[in-house]
Amino acid sequence: EDNAKRQTKKIKTGTKGNGEMASNGHLCKHMAAADAVIPPDFELPVDAFDIPHCYEGDLGAVIVPEGMIKDRVRRLAKDIHAKIGDNELSLLCVLKGSYKFFTALVDELAYARSSCTQPMTVDFIRCQSYEDTQSTGMIQIIGLSNLQELKGKNVLIVEDIVDSGQTLARLLHTLEELGAQKTWTTTLLSKNVPRKVDVKEDFVAFRIPDKFIVGYGLDYNQKFRDLNHICVMSPKGIEKYRNK
Ligand code: HPA
Ligand code: MG
Image (cartoon, rainbow, N blue to C red; front, side, top):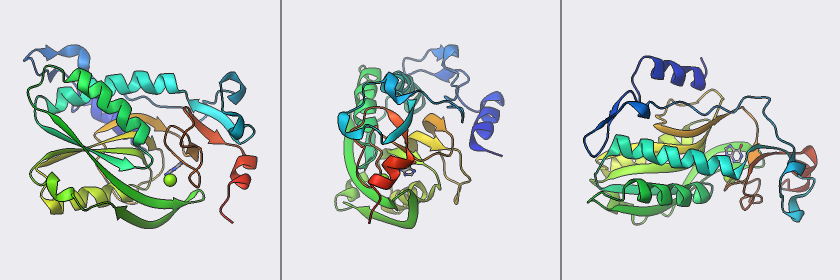
């Protein structure tokens, strides 16, 4: 059973978003959350968008334009706020891939939480598991030095993408060991591939098909992070930037 189906089932059985309590005490019936699923055949022509000259010919299609990401992140921030409420919140950015998603989300959360009495804090961590288009399976966590500060905190892990689930599972385990009080996860993209480990995905911006994608923070051998749309690559681009 794929993730999208599982998630749909979860909503239908009413375990998510069915009349959440808002921080002002009102029950919001309109807050029932739905998934944003990008179908396998959804591809927009690259030439319909303003793509940097340096990446011309390297991309096959746009699958999530920047404007759509912005709209979806706005709603996601509302859903996160409805769930977490007016509590102190530590946001953990998993670099490098989630840098764009993180700043967009922090801005929207700040707006959604503008009447909260408890502050948000931001922390940064770096994980690495990919070379070329394959996961190396070895996950390195870098920049753990000040993570002790997360002891006893409510932590929202902000990831760019979940596919095997290993990086996120490893991070959750690390936070548990550090003694975080409560943990949630949010991911820009959830790829429709079998998980190697079962991991909680609390807030997903987009569910995407099993394609190697770049842009909006995500890289192919460190290139394309600066691209503002989420795209699939062309065979030519994959060859051009392959690690020798
Ligand atoms: N693109 C870039 N980085 C990734 C991907 C992907 O599709 N999956 C996991 N890390
Ligand atoms: Mg990467």
